[in-house]
Image (tube, rainbow, N blue to C red; front, side, top):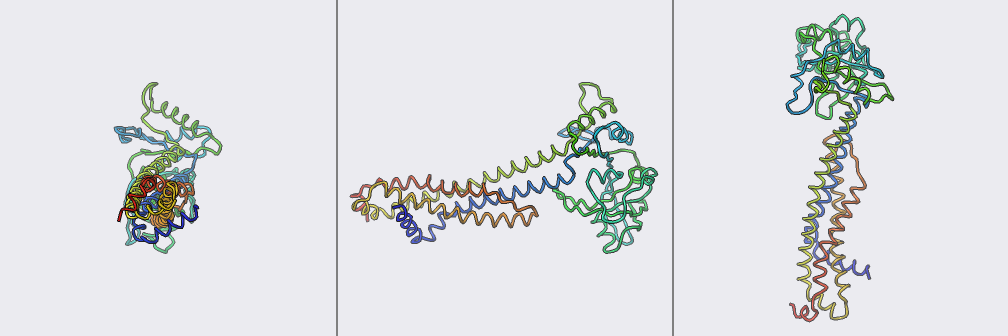
Amino acid sequence: MLFETIKLALQSIRRNALRSFLTVLGVIIGVGAVIAMVTIGNGTTAKVTADLAKLGSNLLFVAPGQFGPGRASSDAKPFNARDIDALRGQLGGVRAVAPVAQKSVTVVYGAESRNTVVTGTDNDYFVTQDWMLTAGRSFLDGEVRAGRAACVIGETVREELFGRADPIGQNIRVQNVSCEVIGLLEVKGQSSFGTDQDDTILVPIRAFHRRIAGNTDVARIYVSAQDGVDTAKVQADIERLLRERRNISRGEEDDFSVRDMKQIVQTAAGATAMLTGLLGAVAAVSLLVGGIGIMNIMLVSVTERTREIGIRLAIGAVESQVLLQFLVEAVVLSLFGGLIGVLVGLALAGLGTASLEVPFLVEPTIILIAFGFSALVGVVFGYFPARRAARLDPIEALRRE
C-alpha cells in the first residue's frame, strides 16, 4: 500500500517536473544555507581557536589600564624594567616573563624600504610566543644588557628587503639606527585577525628604549606559566604583586589588566559559535518559506485533481488513503529538496572554507537535523492540503470539470 502511494507521488512529481523543482527551491536554499553557514562557522571557530592556541594555553597577558569603554590603557602608567625584574624574581611556577614595547618604523636595506613594527623585548619572548628561529641565533645576554643594535627579523621583512639573499650578518637601518640581522624567525603567517605575524623585527629591549623609543616604557608583559601550574593562581599572584608595586589601596580598582589565554580562547570560540548559530537560524527561515511554497502548490494540486480524487473516493478509496497519498507527495517533495540542499550546502561550504582558508569541518548532526527538518516541513505543510483532499465530497468532486 505504501509502495503504491509513493509510486503515485513520484508519477505526479514527474508530470510537473519544473513546478515541482520550483516548489522545493525554498527547501533547497534553506537546507543548503544552514549546512553552509554552520560548516563555515565551525571552520572559522576552529581556525581562531587554533591560532590563539599557538600562543600557548598557559600564557597570560599583562597590560596597563582596564579593558572596556572609558578605560583606555593610555591613561594608565606603563610598566618598566623594575616591574619585569620583580615578576621574574617573586613569581612562582613561571617559565618566562617577556617585556614588550612596540613602534611602527621604516626599515631600509640598500634601495629597499618597508614600514613595519619593531618590538623591543628579550629572549623570553621566544619562549612565551613559542617562536623558533629558522636561521641565525637569538640575543646574547651581553647584547640584551648592553642594548646592542642587533635584530631578529620575520619572513615578510626578509622577503621585502633581501629577496633570495641571506640576511644573516647584514646591517639594516631601523628608523635611524644601523642594526645587524642576527636571526630569522620561522613563518607563522596570518593571524585570525588578519595581521601578518611575519611582518616584524625584534630588538633587545634596552636598544629599543635608548635608540628607537626614547623612553623606558613597557607596553605589555607576556607571562608563561610552567606546565601543570594553575594559570588562575599565577594570575592572582601577578595581580597581587602589581597592586603592591603600583601602590593601589584596598578597595581601589586595578589600573592594569591580566588576561589568561584560556579565557581569551573560550571567549573567541563562544563568540564565533554564537554568530554561527545566529546565521544558521536566519538561514533556517528559508525552510519555513519553502514549506509555505509546498503547501501552496499542494493546494493548487488538490484543486486541479478534484475530479481524480472524486473518482478514487467513488470507487472505494477511503479518506485515510487519499490523505496518505497527498501527504506522501508533499513529504517526497520536501525530501528531494532536502537531499539536493545537503549537496548544495556541502559544495558551498567547501568553496567558502577554501576561500577563507579555514578548516572544512562537516558536522553530521547538522546535516541530519537539516534533512530531518525538511521532512518535517513536508509533513506539517502538506497535512492541510492532504486533509482538504481527503474530505472532498465524492459527488461534488465528480461534478467538477
